[in-house]
Image (tube, rainbow, N blue to C red; front, side, top):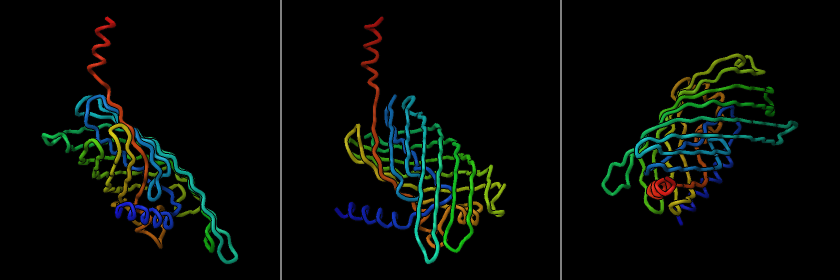
Length: 263
């Protein structure tokens, strides 16, 4: 009960402090695979610090190697009134990426696993700002990223919990902006995203909560300027999302029996 209360309170706080920015990272894909020929897919709603809609998938080729795929769509419009002025903000962002990695059981009970994934993605961002007592700014850009993501997780029949640390190299290019400070500029960022994911439910269907933080490590001045609210910098970088996860595992014994019967 206490945990549920804390989660609800956190959601309310994040909803009040969310802001429109040029770039938002996608929610972290935590595969947590534990069997051969297993598929795990998820859909989540980003409430703060990441894109609104995140679709993710992971498939284990064998008992140690998995592949992943991610799609993120973010569309937000905000409007508020101030003294003798009107403020408008729009942020549309699209991202698709994929990768591969390794996972391994590290205990005899087959409950604790380590995993490490890497990959790349491509995205597009379209923004328009018109804040009270400020200049109108329009900005469009493309970006691509490279990431590595080690982690550790625990899984059983009813829930799984994981901790992942994603390091992302981000390049923004093709920038067209109405502000000379950003127009035709190239931006290179490096971020670290420590993230905790908790899934609860049955073996095939689980709801989950994910929370973490985005820490800029390179060219922090421009990262803060483009992607955070100056008055709420810490809150702007906190990540929180809710969603559900489904799991399918191919029954290899039945597949082999069917092949023998067919032959």
